[in-house]
Length: 493
Image 1 (cartoon, rainbow, N blue to C red):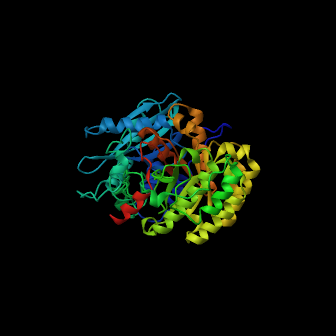
Image 2 (cartoon, one colour):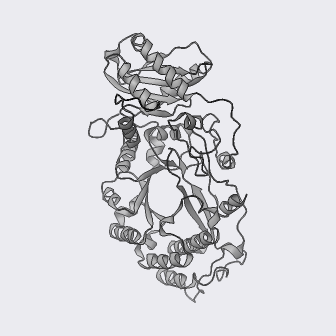
Image 3 (tube, rainbow, N blue to C red):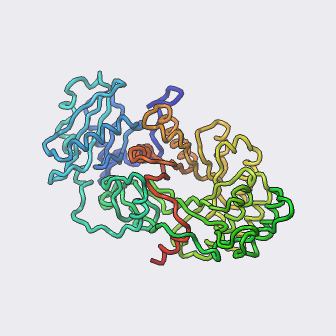
């Protein structure tokens, strides 16, 4: 795969680090997939190689020597694994790609014959030629394949541990197959968010692609007494947006149970739902949730007031239910409206509420859509600077590598970008979208910023994004929004 400038794209940072750490140095190091991968690459005959990759039995890339794998290459891996699953006699195959490359696929089998993964060698077809499988499948290469199979094979029968996220995954419109998302704890053994990532030690590989996290279920609307928030009395004429926001700021701190004047007393004023960011890669204990406020029709017509009420409601709930989220590092993000970005009082009010509730500022972040970053550039820069001083973080939503938005990534407050869903929806059929997604993943890694895909609805897209190094994902294939109250119930149960 090449960049828009015609230069080969470098591999994601995680792959670059693994190559540096896993390169053979001449000393006897631990037996890892990286070390064996480099040993395998060195054992291959002279070829014009594009890359050598090691994949597990689910098609996930555990190690990649260079470059990046696209959907075409990934499809070859998945097809070979499905074909070889029940055939222990198959010793490998070669496939020719449309771009003039040739792929040699070599199975890795445990001593009992079970298929635990494969190695794919990509090279120029002219350099390999017909029948180059015989040149590759030498005795040293097969010896290394046996070592990899021994490293990746399951340790033995293992009783599955309770999976508190099984209900969350079952809510998907198209539930992922069991082979793609096995249930179990995360690699770290903590109750972090679900993960699809893999590790390279024998014990961790045994728990590869296992999912852990909070038990999330659907619940009925929360009681009015818990969710209702006071609103300013309705004047004779409809109030302006500025007046409504000012009145909300002064009233939110004193009343959390009075219904909005003119609204039915049984109506929930601001109900909060949360959508988890599902981890695609191993590492870190941070759990991330996007907060989705659901207001009354009247409040929905005034987004700035709804934003203020949502923040108040969130901080109030976090302060009252610390045991539900504070046991592990956890963060919550809210999407902001244009009116809130233009209101300088919002961050001052937020600072007061953070101090009153005793919630750390880095627990709360705000999502800003990329179009707003260009249309309201001055306001966005001022807001990001205010978040940096306050200690809150910022998420750029719908990031598409717009050259006008890229400079905003210099701020320490920007900690995550959500890739434009139009790009992730097209990655399986459009080469330009693939190149842009890979470029975004690599660029933000260099800056120390996480990236997330959103609105995913196919397991194939999830696997490809995992392979190229994306950190998180959201979408109906992974999880549905649930009321925030379920976080407290899951911590008790």
